[in-house]
Amino acid sequence: MPISGLPILDMLRTKMQWHQERQRVLAENVANADTPNFRPVDLTPPEFERRAPAAQTVALQRTNQMHVGGAMSGGTGPFKSARGGSEVRPAGNAVGLEEEMLKVAQNQMDYHAAATLYSKSLGLVKTAIGKR
View 1: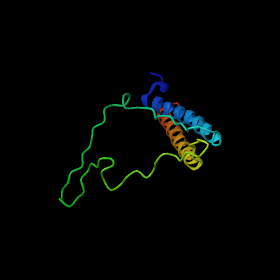
View 2: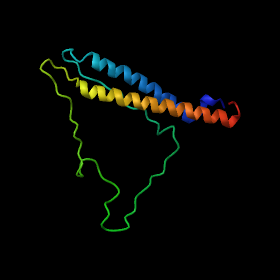
View 3: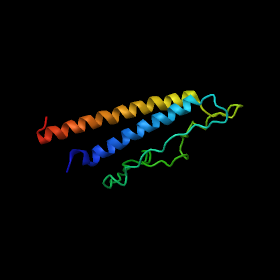
View 4: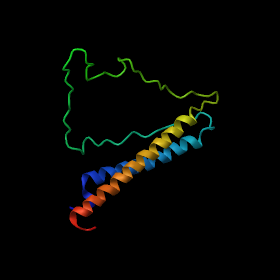
């Protein structure tokens, strides 16, 4: 099996390619911040569940009745999502520059993390087979 065929390296490579494409989409959103009737778009994250081995679910145990339960359902607890949709300006544009720039910064950090994991994993594999 070639090194590039390892599932973890393949998933990291896919993740980095997704972040590159997302950066392009977010840049288009920012570039069209003054375009009338423009709506920002975003990419859906890649799904790795079908490629990854089945993960076991871990349930929390309550050892005392005063402890909070382990599973909270979304929206019914005390914490609710504070983020609504972007405001639409009179020209019909819905791009929020602050939101888009936060997405760009988060995307850049996530890409850097995936690239670092990829290079470290590749280095470990090379060390293990004695190619380093």
